[in-house]
Image 1 (cartoon, one colour):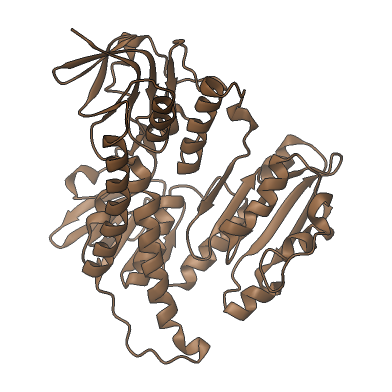
Image 2 (tube, helix red, strand yellow):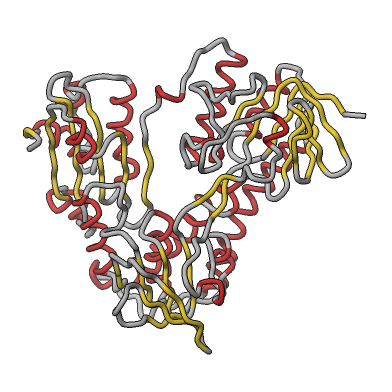
Length: 456
């Protein structure tokens, strides 16, 4: 006999628990199912633990640079066990807070186990059969490792396994040249490891403009990270004290002690029994949803990484807000209303909003672009952190901001001044004459907007 609920939430990532909170607040009964760790990727394997490690790495980097500021620091050592313990505490405290909230939520039943559909309205978790009028999927994603010659013979790590390291690798080799790969590359270089990044494409961060990619490469190489691009035939050979990797035919082998594979992720949708519910997925396994995040089955929604509409904590939480607004608040919010935005947390960080200049150029529209190096930003000079630049692209006819890249100190915060204007659909002139506080990085945003030139 099935246990009946008003709603079932599968997955306790960034969207599921707050939705359960909203639903139970209206008096509905909700079953929340989680097979692993409450909090999902962000809390356990993503933003929170990695940015905690980034903070430790930044502290080590700044300490080594003490003499640049007239500060004597002596020899700098990294106690990786303490670094890991700090990361585990920050991440664990967050997860335990979420668990206690869910377990104490009136009207909610928290169930640990693997959920699988048995019919469009029923889900089995071990020996329990659950039934509900509405079902919400927040099942997340996982790292994938492509089939590369020799890889299966080697003990390699993904973004999950590398978080368990309590010693600094002698030589960390990273396959992949995007966000996760580069954050770990700089982090472990600052912890004291030798680091080599191997990317099969012609440049790092392929979704960014070429000037952004080139500057990121310069930043990493300046810290002693070896970067190999155009690695078109990667193959591995196991060795007694680690492995060797040949990036391309005829290239010299690179010997490493530890291997991180960071080349992509896949949705956790292959073991949900979606076929029994009639829920459609695309050719990559992502659940197909509409602008309100409804699947093709009227009473089933999909939120977070599993729907292919964004792969970030902020997109997952925004998914919850969209579902709740439409379902509970008579507020017709849509996924298509949000502006694409994200950050790359190397140091200095990259803050991104909207389109790249390359995307704007390919669209064929007339545009204006403004760019300023961080060497001309007083705050960056004062802090001794002048790497990078800020760049904004504007529609020449409507004067709406189309996109921005702020690669430099504070870039992940500064970009929000532009993002807010984009979301409000205001012209760039709404902030081009705004008086900002001096000395900040943000004060240069109006300056950049006053120096726009036609995009060639």
